[in-house]
Image (cartoon, rainbow, N blue to C red; front, top):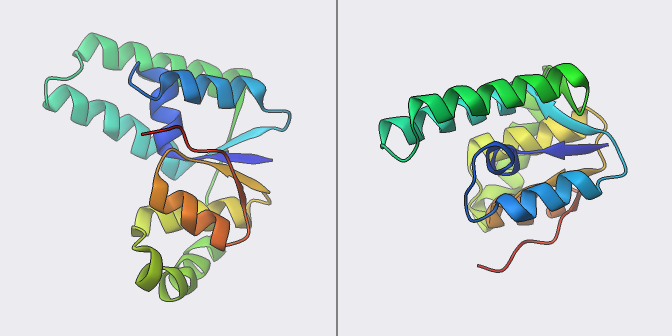
Length: 146
């Protein structure tokens, strides 16, 4: 299974400089694509922040949320609750990885959720999360050039 983080999920539903890469990753996947409830919430919040910053219209946000909901309902994306054990694992990874990688707590929670949900891969467009996920034992996608 492949866990998608919010950077990939956002770019699937709102055209930005990473949309082509996110679409390629999702369409080329040969395993189920997992999304946690936390990732869904973080992505919807990212849409709302774009509206606040006037980088996205309210109408575009509504369309993006509807398209995301449609893909969750259709099974293209599989929505999962984050197991409680993911928080314990995230704290342990924090002590191990944050001093050297500088990874954010939210990113550690995505990595831990992926591991606890049985994913073998994590797709992200965030360099630090990419490095931390690899260090935690997950396979990761190739990052696009910056």
